Image (cartoon, rainbow, N blue to C red; front, side, top):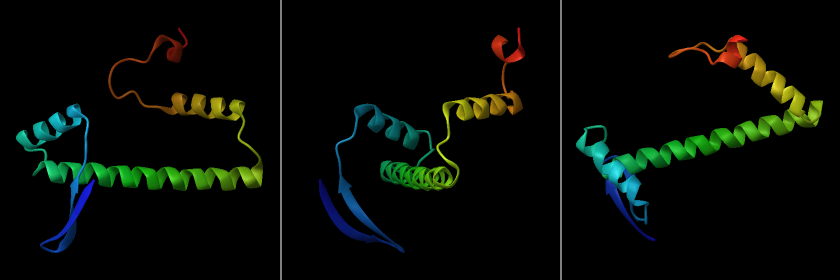
Length: 105
């Protein structure tokens, strides 16, 4: 990987050379052509920012669960199933119909 530094107006940027899956390269070009991204670089930058934020949230969630379990004990499979069931019962259908098992049929 080659990293070169340069200054782009007010934010510091670094040039990055990376090997990327062909379908992702095609998707980045399609986003630029559709006007959904200013450039491939900005599309990749946005993707990296989303990944960073996602990983930070997962780490925070992991720390929260570890703290909860340290205080209250390990969350059991039964508790997880009950929580998932309650979440499904409260869910709002945005598109389509509920599945037969969700309506009790």
